[in-house]
Structures are given as structure tokens and as C-alpha cells.
Image (cartoon, rainbow, N blue to C red; front, top):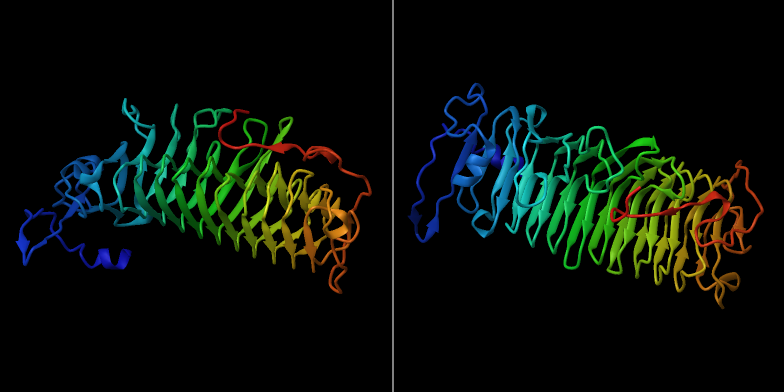
Length: 408
């Protein structure tokens, strides 16, 4: 994508008027430079001024600099805009000193515009009352690619759940690709609301590590949103306060979610499915989490959980509570987990008198027995306990997790 744009970056900054050629509209490249040092012929010194002047499908090329402003891309007349950083290592959109009085307090807000591209920026807080680094809302759609979204929090960081790196809400659609999201307050990436759909792929999402201030989540999908979560690396979401935990990836939605090929480590919970309906969890690595590698809780049903590696977690490799049934859990590698490699509290007529099907899972310990098979390379050196966890996700010191809609 960027190579195609770079080929067009020889413009002097002159913005030609629109004209027709065989019924086609000629598009424009609008150049922005905050001090006109790198791009002396730039017509604009603020990104918002260029957005205001742009026609649908125009490209806005932003030269190196720090732009302290809120960028609002609003309505169908701004559809198709491509907001491209000329030099990603030196182009920053910084939270403004004063927020707009309308819409969310997001540094970049795509509101109802379709097919927008945001590519190659550092998008940074902190700011009091900040809600998001990037927001896609009200039926908008965007590709958010190759950005560094950072410090999206208040100062000092608080327990308010509103500040997230990238959010897709209110029936919007987004492709979130190859970004680095770190130092956020609540969630790194958040998708929510009926009609919302997100493809979240190849991102690196890093929490702040152990904190008693707020229970963070790396990636959260909730409230009837749909998502594909693939190939991400998610780490260091840990809450040291009472009652609750933090997650690498958490779903709180009844709509389909596919979670594949992610690396999730050093969180409280690795992959946490809460009330999910028919999620697919496959090919993930979940390790070194405080509690469980993979959780199916609060009525998660008809899940497919296969070919995952869940190892070296503080409690279980895979944990299923008593209300989660009709799930199929197969061909997982579960090893060196401290409590059990596999635990299922449900009762029924399936594997080991649970309400779920467990087949060909490699591990050493399970509750009840029979959920795993001992593989030749499964050397469990952990301190596996022999107690029974009879709570709904709360035994053995296992807290509950929660999403963005709760305050800590």
C-alpha cells in the first residue's frame, strides 16, 4: 500500500482542481507539513485542515513533524481518504490540549466515513479524559495499519475503563493490521456493539505489566461484535488488585469470533471466552500466564478449541467451568501447568462424564481424569495440585475477568 503512495509523493504540494476524463474523477494528493521544513511547498500545516479540504478518495500525505491536534474524518464526503505518514519514524499525531465538544475524545476519529486508511503514524497521548487513540464509529470503516498507538491514558493513569488504543464501535468495520499498541489504560484493541466487525491481525499489543490501578485487556471483543483475531502477540496485562484479573484476549460476545495463531503470554488469563457462542480457538500459544492459558466460562458453548499450545501457566492449561457445555477440545498440547493441564467442571454424558468432548490432548494431569493423554515429550516439572475447583472460575485463587464496561 505504502509503495503505491510513495510513487505519487513527488507532488510539489499544488492541489489541482478536480476534472473529468472519460467520466473519471482525477484524485488529489494533499501535502501537510507542520513547519514546512521537510515539505516547503505543502499547502497545509495541520492534518485537519487538509481533511476539511479533501474530496472523497483523496490522499493526504503527512510530512515528518509532531501534530498536536484531533483529527476528525466525518461523514460520507470524507470516504476513501488515505491518511499516510511520509516517514513513520518521525510523524506523530499528539493528543490535543483541548478536545472537540462533539464525538468521542479520540485522537483520530473516523465517524461514518467509509474505506478510510490510517497508515504509518505514531498516535500518542496522554491526556485527561482521553477515550481512544483511534476510534471508528457510527458505521464507519477503516484500515488502521503500521501505526504505533501509545500512551492512551490519563495522567496519572486511573481505573476509568474508557481509554483504549484502537476502538471499533457502533456498527463499524475495521481491519487493524501490523500496529504496535502499548501503554494503554484499559484495552489495547476494543471492538463492541451489534453490527461491528473487526479483523485484528499481526499486531503487537503490550500492557503495562503488574498494576493495582486497572485490569487491562490486550484485545477485547464484546456486546455482539464479530471478530477475526489472528497472528497477534499479546502480553503483560496483569492486575494485582482484588477480585478480578486481566486478559491477553477476551471475548464477551454471542457473535462468532475466530482466534487463531496468536502468541499470548504473561497475562493473568491468556485467552478468556466469556459467554461465547461457537468461537473457534486454534493454533494459539498461551503461556506463562498468572492463572489459565485458555478459559471457557459463563456459558461458553459450541466452541472449537484445537491445536493450541497452553503451557507453564499458574493454574490450568485449559479450564472449563460448570456452565460451559457442548464444546469440542482436541489435539492441544498442555504441559507444565501448575494446577491441571486440563480441568472441566461440567457434568454430562461426554468425555469423563463432562458435558464436553475432549480428544487427543497431550498432557499429564486433568480433573476429572481422562481429559488428556500423556505424550512422550510431555515432561511436567510443575507443582501440580490435586484439589477440586468447584467455583465458577473463582477457585484456587482464580479471579473472574471483566471487560471494558466495568470499572476497577
